[in-house]
Image 1 (cartoon, rainbow, N blue to C red):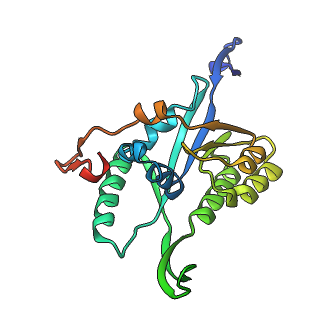
Image 2 (cartoon, rainbow, N blue to C red):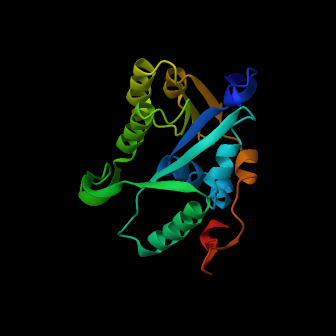
Length: 222
């Protein structure tokens, strides 16, 4: 831990104030969501308090400055949107900042029948994460950044920040059940998400917001 000298009022003596690492977390919402969705045993962890999750990876030498959640609404599915908006409200209440991307229509071809069909593809999340990672470095808002993602598309943004701001540390936390060796090798450090981290970071089933609004954990997420 570093200490900064202070001479209060020019009294001729110094006190030492501990300097804490300023930490930001950038959470790739869909990358983490699909890691939980792809294993039935982890479905129950979707109702996840990202701020509490972030606290699993810091020490007493660290101070969490901000937690950002990057996501988009699946506008073609009202039920999913309703659940997602409930989760977003719970996250905002827990001091998580939301950054929206969007879904765009995309034509795909079936590998079996060769017919084309309309689908949706999430866009902008990796770009938004890259922009925030660099912008917040320019603004000197952090000493250390943690990216919760296994998406190798983030490698260029990590390299860019490391090359431009060598005094800042960019680290990755790989979502549970995922592997991303190239991402781990690019970052300054890496951690593996474990089930104990998820278990200790859940929202309560019912959350009462200021003003009286009550949020309830979706039954599909139990």
